[in-house]
Image 1 (cartoon, rainbow, N blue to C red):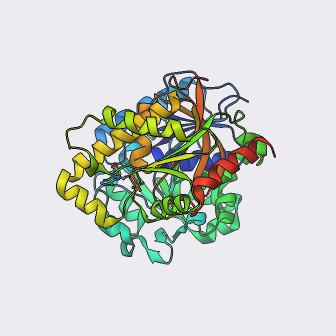
Image 2 (image 1 turned 45 degrees about the horizontal axis):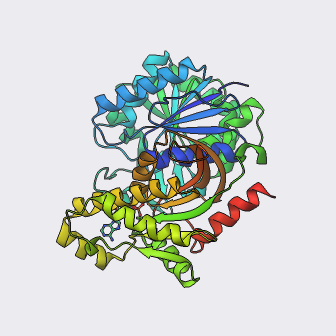
Image 3 (image 1 turned 60 degrees about the vertical axis):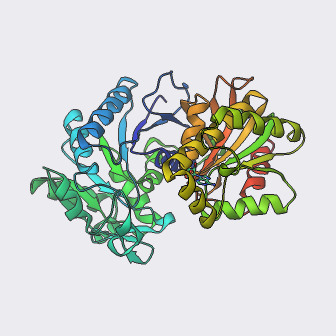
Length: 430
Ligand code: ADP
């Protein structure tokens, strides 16, 4: 079938979120970290290129996105998808508007949509206004976000302020009427000189009605929700096969650098079940201890314990402990030093035969993926909402690759660290 959908995501975990939705809708998907440096598998229907362009300067975000577009065009992708956050995270200058316009310009595209709606995750758009659960975006916690505070829930306004082109609205009444009404509305908006439309969506049904109306649109811009309605435009239906990964072998480990509440609960649960666990206390070593020295000691401990059951290495701590570490070591130093130690532990464990790895924490995941030299992930089945198993080639793995799942802080049930491995085993032997 060749490459159907080419996706450009403005951050790493957002890319996984999109890839996960596409796989659930039946596509075979590969996620790459930055611009791909290796060929993608022949059977892959969609590529999601993960950039880190959400909060960088707009010119940089545009440059990186255009490079990604060019690569996807060269691979023959039939439709492009610019993915941003379901809370429309952007700075006052962008980057959603500038990147959208640059992609439209480069593709010679005269109309696109913009909707972060993701009803499964409580993100809905009504009359152009974004709701987070029951609250308007501007009343939600997003108003205090350190990098991208969102103080206006009216997305037509927010996007218009970032764009030269005119922004309009396709409202919920039109979406409810389905594909023909949406097509008529697009024609009407175009005749008014509008070239970007925010689209209301209150439910998955709305997104599924929207899908067919986008079949001939060269560029779609959205959160991950719109993805559920696109694969059927190519006759693709949900199928267990799309999430198929190689059979899992080798030893099992969990690396946790997340200090989020959900992760604290998962660590406590694993320890309470009698799992082998190593607590990495950042204050246990002098601050100038090379991360590699600490990692060697941890890997030695782990290799003695991991023969028959998963091992957990965690720096996860509660807010009070984290504050105390940050007060003594500085917030940035504490964070980066811990990430480096955990990333080298991940690398050492994989070299020693771990090939089923759970990583908890967004930043921690980024550091581990980098230390493992991973540039491409094939997306498998979802363990918990938004958290799929993946398979990634890595030069550190004796077998050439490993199964890895990257869990961002607040995701996953309390028993995630044990459930994840059982799930992988069941997926291989249904
Ligand atoms: P989350 O997804 O939960 O936000 P991240 O990995 O993105 O998790 O962020 C956690 C940050 O906290 C990382 O920079 C990590 O190195 C740092 N960290 C982890 N453990 C500790 C600790 N005990 N004290 C201080 N900082 C820590």
